[in-house]
Amino acid sequence: MSMPTSIETLSRSPTANRVRGLKLLANCSRCSIRPASVCSALDAGALSEFEAIGREASFAPRMIVFMEGERADAVYTVTSGLVRLFRLLPNGQRQIVGFGLPGDFLGLPRGERHVYSADAAVGTTACRFHRQDFIMFAENHTRFLRRLHDAAVKALDLAQEQMTQLGPRRADAKIASFILSMRARWMEINGAGESVPLPMSRQDIGDYVGLNIATVSRTFTRLDRQGVIRIVPKGVRILNFPALRQLAEQ
Amino acid sequence: MSMPTSIETLSRSPTANRVRGLKLLANCSRCSIRPASVCSALDAGALSEFEAIGREASFAPRMIVFMEGERADAVYTVTSGLVRLFRLLPNGQRQIVGFGLPGDFLGLPRGERHVYSADAAVGTTACRFHRQDFIMFAENHTRFLRRLHDAAVKALDLAQEQMTQLGPRRADAKIASFILSMRARWMEINGAGESVPLPMSRQDIGDYVGLNIATVSRTFTRLDRQGVIRIVPKGVRILNFPALRQLAEQ
DNA sequence: CGCTAGTTTGATCCGGGTCAATGCTGGTGG
DNA sequence: CCACCAGCATTGACCCGGATCAAACTAGCG
Image 1 (cartoon, rainbow over the protein chains, first blue to last red):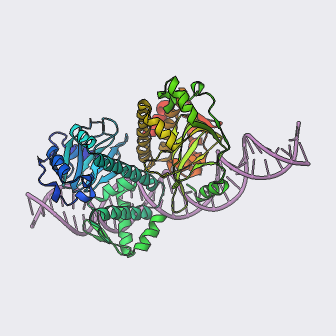
Image 2: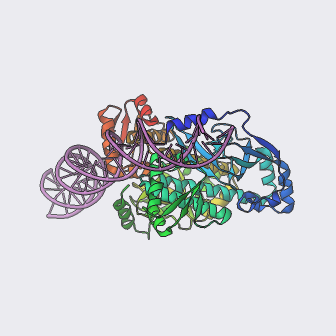
Image 3: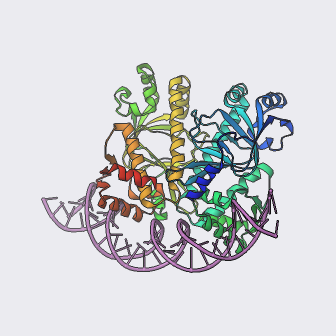
């Protein structure tokens, strides 16, 4: 975690005019991440009804989606790119509490205000719905509501899991767990094999698992040299699964 | 975190015949922690109806309330003592994910199985309800249901908060935050002032905030010597609030 | 081609982990 | 009533992993 980064992130991100593009949804039925999203619970009829209340939003890197404390008046389904979910601590450090991947649903806190902030880590697109429209739609489509509930359970579970990762574990254990958990999440989206995309920066990874950027970098390098993974542009390729799993258990 | 402790904890805790006592609820209307519990949402009539489906359970120190992975067929409201909520990690370490204080509601995961374990840190009493009875009752009492929802929100918020505490923070910052958060929770129960009960062991505190028992002890001692707190039996007394708050922010 | 943001790598230092000895306290039985 | 014991807390000595600071390197991108 580093103070400078979080400050920079904020000052470089204009809070006004956040959304780069905002146009009608083209065709949900052809949407490639639909199977992995809450929309998978909708049949053709419901889908076109749903399409009518949504808009496509796109975010340039570092653009803010919403801020902690703001009224939550819109909800999102990420369709491409990567969203960082984070809290700014009193001392200026940034704790990333999660990553929003394509298919992930964001922005519906239990209360009326967001409890964490969200910004785009890379160029990102999402479907945007007004909270009221969305809730009304959900209440008229029971299967969809249940699917939303499932999504919430999954998020809670991920958060609990993350709590156990953040404790006093060794750097290579944290990084190994991180790689495996990202792999598991990509698997649900595109069934990928040993290749794991990591679109976020080293700093983001550090702020997520609780390590300094230098330590993150060194640990990746070490795992690469040990032949456990191979570092590739914007990701890694897993070479030795058993070794990686063993490290993750430490 | 220490491996031996978690192992001991398990082996010393018989899984059979866990509940020491199990008798009818005496008189909910006179229950001293009712204002702080979900039962506060019930009027006299509903309360006696509620009384009829509950039983009082008591747990000796180290007795298990429920285990991660088990079917969740009973729910609890803690009435006295302290419950530890924890996960056992693959390497044998124990991560305490929360403490159940008097008034806290436990044991209703979103799915049908518990996602963490719970045991008594000290002699503890709780009201026990069969899950089905409880859910049926709740569905017939809307105010109660809403109150339950609030409790869930609070728990989720605490978990997120805890995530930000576990990161790479200094030992005195972690301990200071811990003391202040325990104080805030006791305040809701008995409005106590600068005196903060800490019924759990040093090991429990360490497994919660992510510190070694030795470091926990040393940090308490240091804060005491610095005049920020005074260590008293089973707790601390806060002597210098501003200093403690300042430490917590680091 | 050169600028900028991000990444890697090196050198150094310190906080907290580890191991182990000692101290304290409350419960038990002679 | 006191001696003993078990479990927990405290304290000390030592060491190591990761933070910090800083420099060199690399990859996009205009």
